[in-house]
Image (tube, rainbow, N blue to C red; front, top):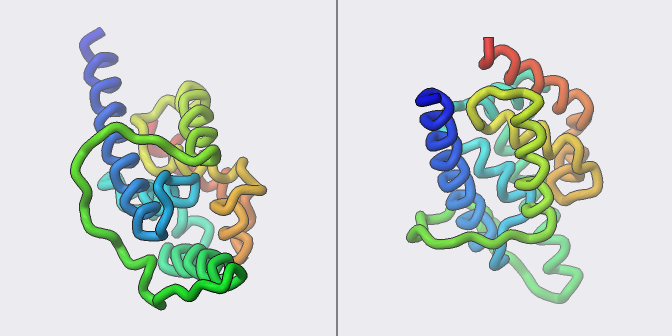
Length: 168
C-alpha cells in the first residue's frame, strides 16, 4: 500500500512538473493555455528521459519537432498579418507555480493519460504523453509529427515499447 501511495505522489509531482513546462511553452508561443503540442515539448524536458528515448526509437529529432511547431505557429500568425521572431519558440523562462488550465487538446491529453497509465502502469513519464499524442492525429501536436515524417502509429509502438521496458 505504501508503494502505491508513493507512486501516486511521484505521479502527481510529474504532472505538476509537466504542466508547468507545458504552460511555459504555451506562454512563449503567445497562448494562455497549453495544448497537446506544449505537453509534448514538456515531455521532452522531463528528467526520466523516456520521451527522448521514444524520439530516438523512431529516428525523430526533438529540435525538428519544435521547429515544425514554430513554423506552424509563424504561418498561422502570418495568415493573420502578424510576424513572429525567428526564436520565439526558444525554451521559455520558468514561471511561478499556480493552478493550470489547458486548451481542449491539452485537456483531452490529460484525460486520456489516465487510461493509458492504467493499461501500461509504469511510473508516469514522457513516454505516456507521446503514446497519447500518437492517437491525436488531428491535433497540432500530431500534425507536427507528420511534418517531420514521423508516423504516429510507429510513435505509439515506440512509446509502448519504452513503457514496457521501464515496467520490466
